[in-house]
Length: 93
View 1 (cartoon, helix red, strand yellow):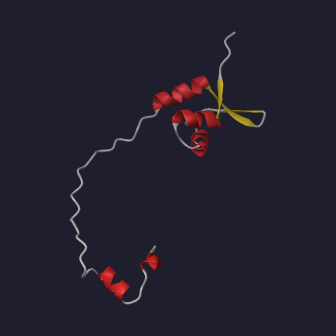
View 2 (cartoon, rainbow, N blue to C red; view 1 turned 30 degrees about the horizontal axis):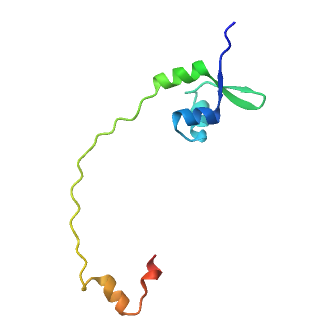
View 3 (cartoon, one colour; view 1 turned 90 degrees about the vertical axis):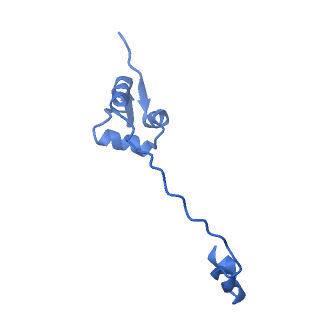
């Protein structure tokens, strides 16, 4: 008789590199099959392997972002005028 391994929610979260609440959401949505044993949620290894076969990363396209304009601070900058009026920069932090 072959015994199947079971994982806890936190173990699956570590393996998938997600938060444990995400694993619980997958279970609630029916994407990941689990059983409740002794008040604890356990995920069979076969269910985990099936889940990892079906997931894929979202398709992101890498766009080239436009260059930000260079901004040079000068003594005429409004922030320096505020300091001259008695406003301390620590108020803005």
